[in-house]
Image 1 (cartoon, rainbow, N blue to C red):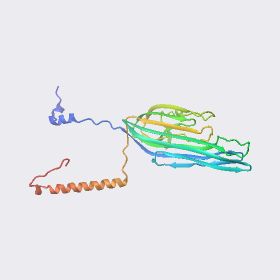
Image 2: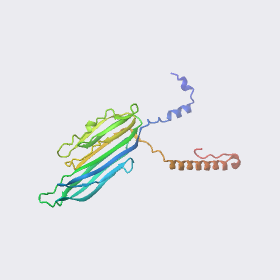
Image 3: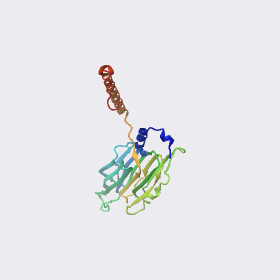
Image 4: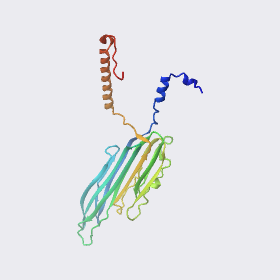
Length: 293
């Protein structure tokens, strides 16, 4: 059988063409674009009778990607007195959240976690009817939202743990309605730790998988305010693994671009100088070319 088109191609050209490697498919790009974080522990309150005491640990609000770990850690003792009542409120606390985005082989893994722990009690009561109390009300919040973009349809696997009243949502920006909408296939109810009823604190383990379309996304834990003294500990965590993806390359800062351009200009000037020195008039009719010219 004759191949007239191949007959018109020079043998050497055909051999080189057949030896050229086929470029692998470009992995989808994943880029972390923003973060909104809130940690707070306000109004730790306890006391005896009208001698109520309050401790405010503070608030952290951040829209910066770094540092990745944020925390409110401390302790305090405050005294209160009213009428014939007096007491001291002692409290220690640790409110922490963190995240990471990393390349893991052919996958990109986004992971995040948050936790709260507090101990408190009222002591030094002056009345015989006053006994030490270990319970204290409080208002606390530990919320984190991470924003990222996907360059293509991505299969994913997700897993995590949720305390009571915690859940994890993944939402995609809808250009048509200009609102955030739950990502197709993401079952947030599966991540729900259940209602915060009276009883011992427990964690719910969950996992799910599916596909995410290209677009802008956000993933966040529940924005629930905590204040139940029977839950002095709560936490949440998740891992979102995107298969066959790679981290987007960071865009150089303006100052870095200036340095790169200056370096390129210097290189071109140097090469022009070499070309002038090695012109035919300087080398007896020969032009010496460097590798890569």
